[in-house]
Length: 264
Image 1 (cartoon, rainbow, N blue to C red):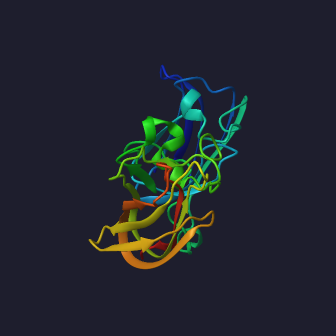
Image 2 (image 1 turned 60 degrees about the horizontal axis):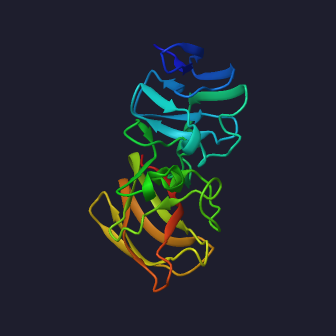
C-alpha cells in the first residue's frame, strides 16, 4: 500500500523537500517559500479522515479527503493578508499528516472548521464557497468563515478576515462537509465593526435534505446560537439575508460553526 506523503514543489515542478510514512508523516522544510510553490498532500486511501497541519502556526485540522492528491498553493502578496503574518514565513517550516483515529472523528466538535480550505474543488473538506466575495479580495473570501478565527470587531487583514457580500442582496454561502453529518447547533459570528458594519436581522438555512429554517438575529458582538437538529446532512447553505434598517450597507460573516459529529 502506498504511504502518506508531503512534499514541497516549486512552480517549475522541482521537488524542494519531501517525506512519507505509513500512518504519519512529518516534514520539516529548511528554506523559504517562493512564489508558485505548492504543498502536495498525498494519501493512499480517499473518502477518509486525516489530521493535516499545513503550517506550524495554523491548527492541525481534522479533514475528509476525497482525492489522492491535494494541492495547496502557498499564498503570497494580497492572498497572504487573510492569514496570520507568521504563516508560511521564514526559512524553517513544520508540516504534519496522519490518519485520524475514531476517537477524534466520532466526538462532538465543530464540523465546519478547516483553516486549510481553498477556492475550487480541492477534495479537502469541510469546504466553503459563495456566489459572491467582495471584489474578489482574500480578506472577504468564503474560506475565512470556516478558518476558526472569530475576531469580529474590525474588518480587513488577519485576524479580521470575513466573508464579504459586496452589497449583493442575493448573497449566499455554502458549507460542504464532504460526507453525511449529524448536528444540533449552529453558531454564527456576524461581523460587528460598528458603525462601519450593518447586521442581518433574518437569514435562512437550506439543508441538503431539502428542509430549511429561518432564524432571527440582532446587532451583537456575541455569536448567534441556533438549536437546529439535522441528521445525514452533506451540506448547508446560508442565504436570504435581510439586513437591518441602518445607514451602513456592509453586513458580513466572520465565522460559522456547526456542532455535531459524522453520521455513522
